Image (tube, rainbow, N blue to C red; front, side):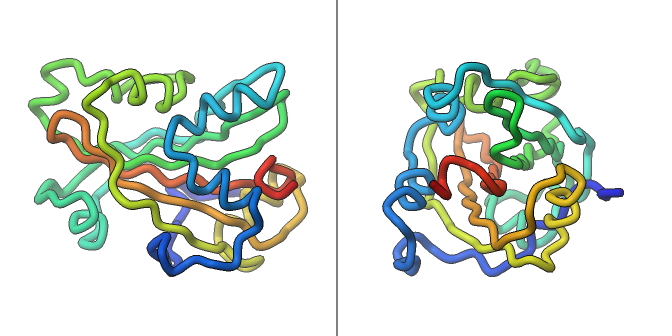
Length: 183
């Protein structure tokens, strides 16, 4: 049984240090617009399956990434499915800011709505640097891969900090076996 949140502790590399990617891998990992929109354009049906949505303490590393002193965040873990096939495991860390809760932050309580459908509608959205990571066959994420009956293989992922009206949040996306990225 998978325990949430799934640890995404690996060596994340700045984009400038990643050179051994295929053209397809590069195109998907460095997509600057909505990954949700790109996935939708490659499938007949797109859906989101929420795996977990809970408040957790932020690690010191996450606080540094988010440039915040807040100690907790809403962690949302989802699968992005194309034609009922899991393509991407995504995890977001939305700092638990009381003022945002009081203003009805649209990023909280999203249910099965994709985060990309919400954030990329705002012209003030800023994405900071994309970092890339590889998740080997013994990484804890592989437990989810096994539960999905997908073959174990090294997986590629990306993460970015986004800023929306001075609110920073972290989004990590890992491409699962069989995702378009690997074709």
